[in-house]
Image (cartoon, rainbow, N blue to C red; front, side, top):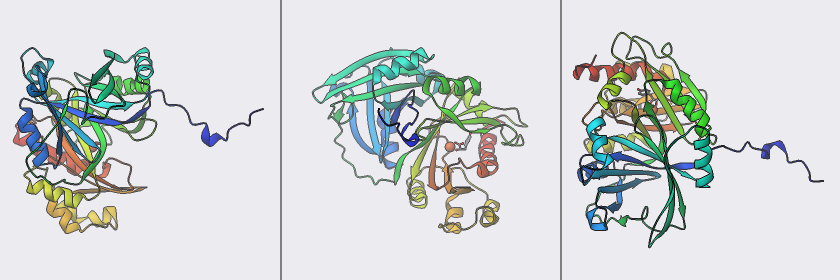
Length: 372
Ligand code: TYF
Ligand code: FE
């Protein structure tokens, strides 16, 4: 008789195994100029391209990489694409959070059986560099998850893309990976239930409007996490407060739910943020009073508090360690999408201790925009 396996090995099989976030695709009105911004301001490297020169007649896409982060900037070449429609409705924004999976057909079919929104059945793309399997599942608003499974693919990015020969020098800013991707929706429970049922995610943390004081632009939030703990997708909903919720402002300008922020990891936030600021990236500011009691609140940290204050970097401590984070102003014309730079030194949280300072800073921006 076969020996019973020790319990440490009987790990529960995930219903939707995800290896990684494969790329995040931004629909933009001018992919060429957006690519220049992410390359030269954020330190991404341009690696692949498709457009008229490669036989793509309806869209142009630039692929940028930094560490394990991959961004695609896509623009329309004709008015008959859904890209042009997307931009008319939402402005520029994240269309796709693509997920690298195994057993794509099985993974896709299971998700659809559990109530996943079927956007596109599995298909195979192919060029001289090999094959890639894909399928598309819908999520909040017009956002999608493209599932990707390469099959012996050896090209620069995906079939149909050519390696990009770029002619300028730009330094990496030290961004190394995706920490979390946040969505703003109208009814949080609808979408947290969706991620539980369809993708097998669980709730890591729940912030309600009590935790997140109603004095400040109020919201509720649940952090959804997959079985490996690698993929974190927080979902926000507006809450009633004294002022207009920052989430409501987003929903008004985006015309519905969508991606609010991309949180990108660095191992050296001081170095990364210094470079981004030199490159002209605009960040939310933090009042000097925040730094007065920082030492009391977070105890000993490796960084020089003066330097953090100079750069407006926020710090929070939890049971496991501490984290440092900072938020850009919106990176598009509408007050919608922004980027968070985060460094984790053990901490597993989301900067809960910074919510008050952060939301006051967001509120100052809302006020300048006339949206309170
Ligand atoms: O992802 C988070 O939870 C943090 C804090 O509208 C945050 O980055 C939460 C909500 C929000 C902006 C930032
Ligand atoms: Fe965040």
